[in-house]
Amino acid sequence: MKHGYEVLIIGGGVVGCAIARELSRYRVRAALLEKDADVGMGASCRNSGVLHAGFKYAPGSMQAAVSVRGNALMDDLCRDLKVKMKRIGKLTVALDAEDEPMLDHLKEQGEVNGVPGLEVIGRDRMQQIQKGVEGRRALYSPTSAIISPYNLTIGLAENALANGVDFHLGQKVTAIARQDGRWEVRTAAGDTFTAGVLVNAAGLFAADVCRMAGITGYEIYPCRGEYYILDRRLDGTVTALVYPAPKKNAPGWGTHLTPTVDGNILIGPTTEYLADPEDFACTTNIMARLRRDAQRLLPGIRMSDYIRNFAGTRAKQTPPEVGGSKDFVIEDRKDLEGFINLVGLESPGLTSAPAIAEMTVGMVKNHLALDPDPAFNPVRPGSRDFFWELSPEEKAERIAEDPDYGEIICRCEKITKREVLDAIRNPLGARTMVSFKYRARASMGRCQGGFCIPRIVRLLRDEFGWNPEDFLKRGADSPMFVGNMRPDKGGQAHER
Ligand SMILES: Cc1cc2nc3c(=O)[nH]c(=O)nc-3n(C[C@H](O)[C@H](O)[C@H](O)COP(=O)(O)OP(=O)(O)OC[C@H]3O[C@@H](n4cnc5c(N)ncnc54)[C@H](O)[C@@H]3O)c2cc1C
Picture (tube, rainbow, N blue to C red):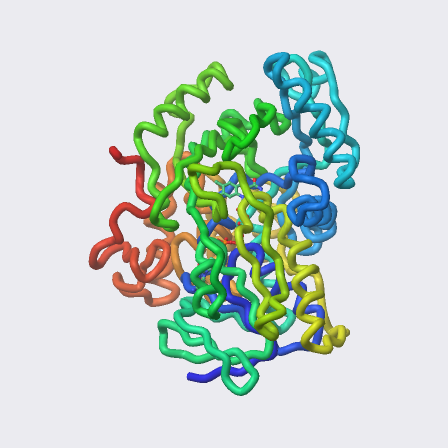
């Protein structure tokens, strides 16, 4: 089939979805193409969920500009899209005398970048912010925050869709050509899409998309980070983000504890360069190392607190022998009319997404006159978590209106049948078990779906008439009941 648009976005990660949502403020025919069965299946839902303040990046760099602006945009955005976000602040800790000059350097750099409220604080203040934290001094950044990366990516996509952007899931772009002054994009599904403006937001595959358009000189080096997720039992033990002061040219921040907005704690991420950008497996030796680190960082942790592991891959532009990281590329190609290119958006791409979207739409305006759409509605419908956020009276009222609120499907996370049904009937039409999990949180608790997955399967069979072959975990290559799952991708820890 052939589809014509004014703007086409390749990639439904947080950046592509933020661009789609920003474009939906205007009267424009726009669409997003995503190769996977849902948005956010790449790095965007496989990360620490931290909104960085923006002090780590060199003044004048793209990373500094978009992280500081992105962070500042998040309060309004999260309110409008019903995204969970908490401004818990961060301590960047000097563990020894050698680390101390780094704190002053980061504070100065952050102030040049426009980061508000930075302070270097002593041990007592540090311990008031996070009980038990060890170290000599710390840089305190009050605008650092935690956010639900799934809520954000899905919220942006759903609001863009509601405001008129088309989403084409399961559409892997395989070829790009210039035809009669327009971009012509072909997909593995056999469809053709044309547009005057094409945006490359393909994350780990951005360099491949560049090559399809005839752009050379970009390379992505996938760098995996593995994590453990800890049970809600430990909710409240980590009250702020605590990171060790960074070492020069280190590829990441080192192992640290990150609380999530849902009451879990993440341990990780590690750094390991890989050939396959989508090898999301966790490995036994790294898991053992994370457990040792966790024991040191959080004494009192029990073996039964480790409920799950996962991995995400950073789209680095620097090879392992160079290390460190390179600045984001956000460019309106002068040599290719209407080609907007986003490459190497490794961390802090989650934080920066709304600002990258503003910048990208500014570039779209170089090619198209965009008139504001008076019908644009920034607010996404949605309600608070039934179990965790409503009072007993509000719960009783809801159940009286809709008895599906009275049936718990996920016992660990206390998710009701109504919430699961809403996730199943999501507006993007995503139909995998992971899509339902990211929307309703069912199966994210300590039993990891032992209780709720059979109930969700029954719901899908009874209410929607699904057959065994319709049940997919993440997409077409991961059938749940018929055929074989793709090996080694996102499974449990294994020997390496
Ligand atoms: C371990 C880890 C921890 C991180 N922690 C943080 C953090 O705490 N805070 C922070 O700000 N950032 C963090 N990041 C970075 C952040 O996750 C990324 O910068 C961000 O998700 C990048 O978003 P994206 O949309 O560019 O890429 P992706 O999420 O990778 O999205 C790209 C999309 O393009 C699609 N695609 C690719 N090729 C094609 C094609 N040919 N056709 C159609 N679709 C295609 C992919 O399927 C994918 O959905 C972390 C990253 C990792 C890996």
